[in-house]
Image 1 (cartoon, rainbow, N blue to C red):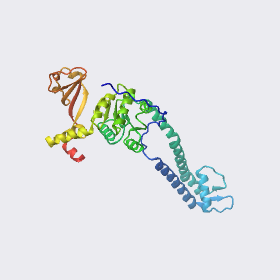
Image 2: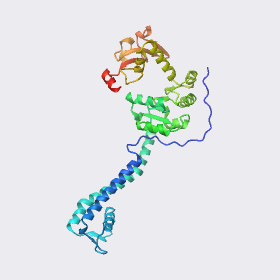
Image 3: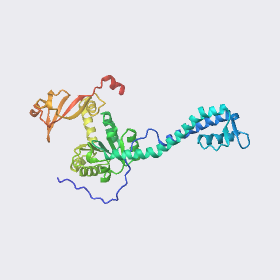
Image 4: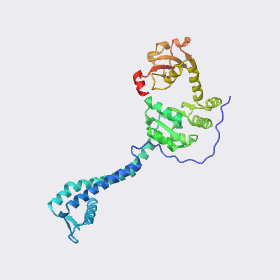
Length: 356
């Protein structure tokens, strides 16, 4: 069947924000903490000046009231220094030198730090994320952060993928906030748009995972991604059987049907109570075993598949052919082969029980 043509769309260019990552402290909390710290330090200085008011001299009426103390504290903290109120006793000058001056510096540091954090640092962070965006390479692009997308990201991180190497695109700010909390780079936008995918350098990606929630949207995203990145592997989730072929024709290398997989688990359970458990175990790094796909090593060339030392060899992919472990071709591995094997994760029964 001929591959479906990518539909033409005439839409105005979008304006995209740079990639984001979660902040350690929310902006409002950071502001509140800084203001609270500054007020607390100023209150301490007011208390110190009030207790030592006998050592202060008011050049206006020679009477230092509480209002005068507050006024003197503020001009002292801000280093304005009008000179109308001044410390005259040795004790008051010592207090200014030992107690008030360090507090003054701390308050100045807080306000300067706030200006740095909300002006310079924010500008720097925006510039830095743009630089990261420009240099993205060998990263995982996740298009859609729904149930399947979020589970995929969690599994990738569990398999030791650095969250900073994962870019999540979604149109939902709430979902993107969850991805940020996981440490991923996020971009709010429409994954069916060329501009959105180009913004995350999809041509340099290691792989693309598509889980848009709707099959029609997923297929359109696959068409867009394949058009922009002809050589990047694309894995997509579809839910209707008759859309699996369309997704492959659109350019997906792997198509996963969760409904069909659930049916396989149910059917396996009918044949034996441990089959579905083992299949689930294989699919996740949190189990005792896992499926691994890797290229053949130089020292393995010429050896049979069942002689590999890293795990239990199940299948060889030689070009476009899939060779099972029982077939004659599996008796000698060749250069360029891709091996699918079962390996142990290192999880023991006790650790699995604790995690459960």
